[in-house]
Image 1 (tube, rainbow, N blue to C red):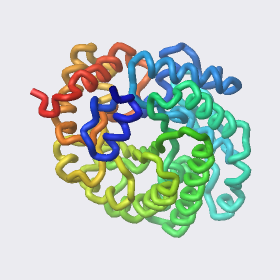
Image 2 (cartoon, rainbow, N blue to C red):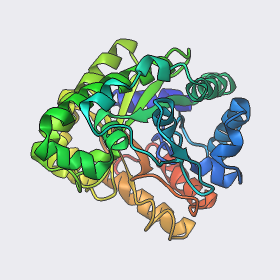
Image 3 (tube, helix red, strand yellow):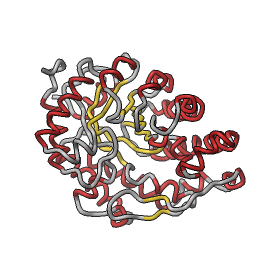
Length: 348
């Protein structure tokens, strides 16, 4: 019998694994909600944090666990930004770090990697790997350059800079490319990490035009993916919104799998990608996982498998981050349908 880790690897290699891998890699704060704790409660206890993450994912029988989602603002805090901790979600960035080139030049990536927050993230990853003992796939989560740039400058200001001050935008993206690489390399110092999960929500198809995507997203994301390819880890990228009109561009980045939003039609995505990279998604996190019953979640998840899983190279995921209002029973229903239809690649 294959392990969850082996099934995940087979999916990334474009194969038909013994059972379809499934998980909640976009639900970084969700295990906290389930266990009735907050990130603020856990910042002094990486061992307890790892135990909570592992315990919740084990209960729903997820095939992989992603360390760092729900805590990505901590990297901005480590650079000197201000972060507000909330009781019902991920920390919120409450101050902007950059409005000019001089602001950018004052930021110190090397110093950021030496902060207590970064040490906490690495300690959580280390303990999660120890508890897991190779059974499930362990991914480290971080942000892509475009999203980091929007977090450092503010999405509205950064979006204007793309048009009015492209030189500043390019300098910021060069910096955030180095920052993204430094963060992932820092986390990949933990032995036993299986993959990297790169989230790029600000590069959403609902926010960025295809023209700007090709100029300001694709080359910097490619630099990160290709630099990290030397570590021989699995690579998964998530981009929010409807990215159907730019899916054909993504294989050139070197990524192994793309996670798509519920706005993307899986059949169409499968046709466009044509097996060049893997595909994952895309159960609606609100209209389905939050609002429907477990039986209804099961049926919608089954349709996702019909549309995406027949030829292999597929993982079942929520289409985006899941909230505190998503029940454990609904997540379990999504997981169950993937595991139950292991050998039924032409689902009826």
